[in-house]
Image (cartoon, rainbow, N blue to C red; front, side):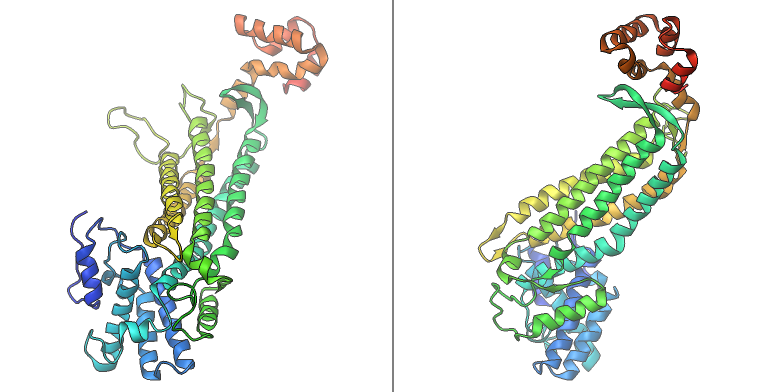
Length: 446
């Protein structure tokens, strides 16, 4: 990945610098949402510590201002520690502590950096440990990103697919099972299944909220709460909940909250399920649009870009293919998160950076892909009504409605004759005078 680009005016200190030097592994750094979640903790920790009488007012005010600037993205270029670092995420916690302390000192003295009057450990990290901050930041960043970004994107996709279901409700086409012709269905009914998949995905993600809402803050090193005020966590978390609009609460059991990452694994599993649903939908849509003349061709997709460098006029299903690749990536991230979740050895999970990065990456790429898929694919889908009608008339499976009238064996004989002669079921049924034509048309959808 190459060396990390170090900002010209570094606000971080010695611990961050050592982390940069020791962990030049991938060049991958944490998403802004994760850094902002840590800064949100620091901001409200400073306020509560001041109210509890353990942090002077002038230091508290400077830390709060500096933390808010981090939240606002002013110092995004200062967070350059690789995601592959110590498993507790201590290097990133200290990166944030040092940047906030350096900026707070600049606010107070006019000079960047140093450890006085604001110390990154003694003041910015007061009442905290990397071991409770990083798990809390994972939950904060994940829940707010799901609620504010991914769920609105999925709701938009759900509405787009539902609109198409309503639009196509009168388009009769052939159903397919085992990739073979089955009995008729409407295109609207087919799309209603996709809409329900998206709707259930939304519900699955929403159901993870109570577990993600529990924060480890207050447990400090091993869950006992050593070196923190007994009222600290509850009050800080209340302020975080108020600012984010999410129902964050102190973890019911700090030992579970720090030793395990089950809520993150659960959220990832819900994201994976959404990804699998989207793969089914995207695959169906590109197959239904295949051809357009020599494939199924029952729907037409928006023409977005030339699809071939050698075949003029060829247009490919680029948006379904984008979504398929993103879904595959999310499934891969889930595997890494699952393995990371198993690393809760005794009182601390030690794959927290891996879990944080992959969970947020899943949320971010799904959000982007779902938005684009709704806007540039689903909204522009049209039905090829002529092709849908043609496939119904040709289908051998159309013999199925005759079974209650003539029995399975006679219906199978008609189906065999249709295969061998190329005639339609309707034509053979008329020849054999199974029913008057008017009744046959009603039964077979004529």
